[in-house]
Figure 1 (cartoon, rainbow, N blue to C red):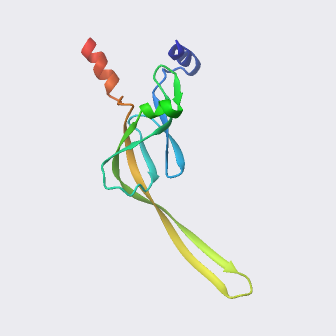
Figure 2: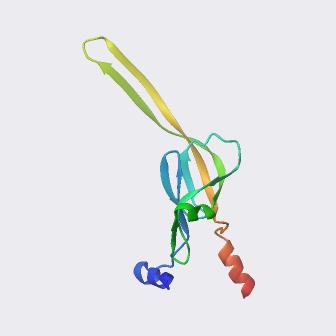
Figure 3: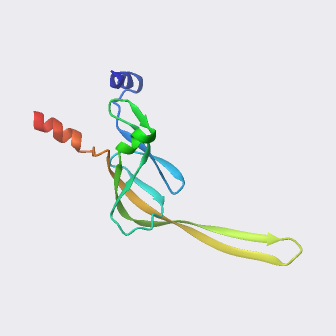
Length: 130
């Protein structure tokens, strides 16, 4: 019923998404998304995140402890560096001036599935029925 409401309101069917938290930031992700998060510092190729909120394909929203039942599986695709930031510190009348730079490290992460439901799970189920 609520998916009919979503189609009427937005013109498209509801898709499953999750809100995850990593590196002090929150990201809204769907299966198949590639996101750039703060450096994870792990050598594992498979990582998982505990979602803060999950919206299912039926349009229901799950949050809190119930959302932990929908783990977000992801694959580490690589690392990247952000733009260089120049930091200049200056104290007037003391002769103090310091110039430093910083480049933030990022990890590229592809979201494989949310709660065990991947992007190709639904079409495969439909083709098996037909």
